[in-house]
Image 1 (cartoon, rainbow, N blue to C red):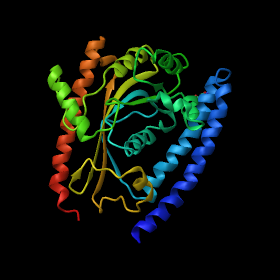
Image 2 (tube, rainbow, N blue to C red; image 1 turned 60 degrees about the vertical axis):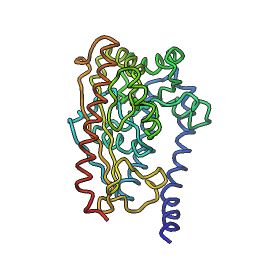
Image 3 (cartoon, rainbow, N blue to C red; image 1 turned 180 degrees about the vertical axis):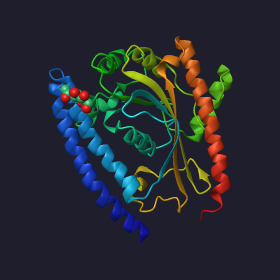
Image 4 (cartoon, protein in one colour; image 1 turned 90 degrees about the vertical axis):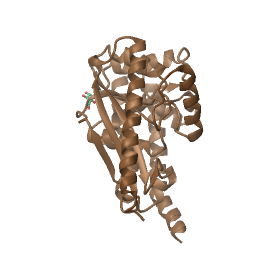
Length: 304
Ligand SMILES: *[C@@H]1O[C@H](CO)[C@@H](O)[C@H](O)[C@H]1NC(C)=O
């Protein structure tokens, strides 16, 4: 019965949102031909459109389904453009990032690194493209043109942006964790706890380009953590975030995002220095995650 209720509930909540998403994707795709003519207006219009879609799904997760997102760490200044790096666990990560973006007034300006293949998905992919999302293959020699396109909006046109990437390039799984450990051992690198060793190339390229503009002031490093009762790193699936009525703390759900802010001008100047910086960042993120796990475990007993 509960399952049937959830299916009904999830559908009622998600279908109007999906219809809106589709409409907005068509609208944004229609902006594509106008992009070279009135780029600034297109950026603002597509940002506002995207915000409506993202805010709506955030409301479903937090208000309708009761998820409480805890934010900790440095104060994120209002309206500041930044390079954002985060660990990647699941679909749920988007809500964590969006929570911070809403508070910083930057939800409409979130731009994620996405897979280049999406460009060929009618409307949805075109929408991402028109929004100015970097669609990359992660073969950095091939991606140069695409990155120039995205960076030029931020550097030359001074578009406010949170340029967001999941530096592990993929979601965490135990198998990938094992592969990462093997790789780190072989290459004499430190393996961060609870995380995959980060891909540094994209980060280095991004920082080296965007530090040229006064528009982008900082790098935000986010640590994303979940628990359900005693199960660490166990977030609800995408469908559950839409359909489950009680993603509450009483049911044992904890959603946490921890932010650190680093002024861009304090980062190392060389490519090697930046790669090392990201590595250290990940090691520290792993330590934070382990502390969080232990803390949650100590409290885990009080949940059902
Ligand atoms: C776009 O939005 C920004 C911030 O809201 C504003 O400062 C800028 O003038 C807008 N640009 C255009 C062309 O409407």
